[in-house]
Length: 184
Image (tube, rainbow, N blue to C red; front, side, top):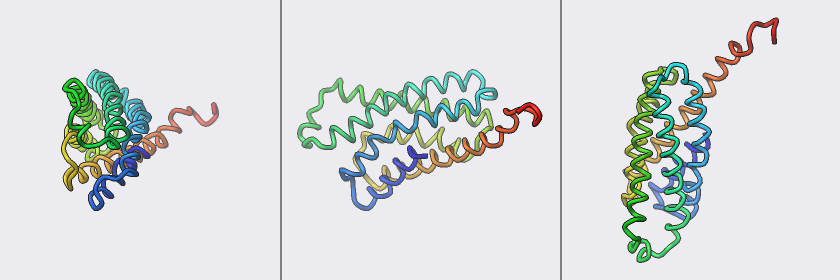
């Protein structure tokens, strides 16, 4: 849930104030909290997701690692540099940041499609994961605006909703996993 809150709340604040050091730091660490959510989502849908789920999970996990590193760099390193220095970034650095966003976008679309296929989570956040997260990733290089802040809020809300759904699924399956009452 922290990942969603660490994306959505700063996004809402930035819609009013613009990017600040505080919102930048929170956004920079947010991807670290996404890894446990991604693992939990996959475990909750594993039997029903099929090969698409396994491949989508792998690509999304790799993309999350790359995009998380890019988000950390953009929000905790480059944010604090002069604009002239950031504007002079070497082409390989720009391509690496864009490539990480692209891998994350493809992985999010694939994993989101596997969630839709598995039908273990609510449809609306699964659709949002499939569509909004890729746009969110690819909008990273765009200048801050009300649109990018809105994407942060929707992406954060999607992740919070899926976190709640993971918890609800785990609680619903707990009695089944524990076995018959006499064997606990």
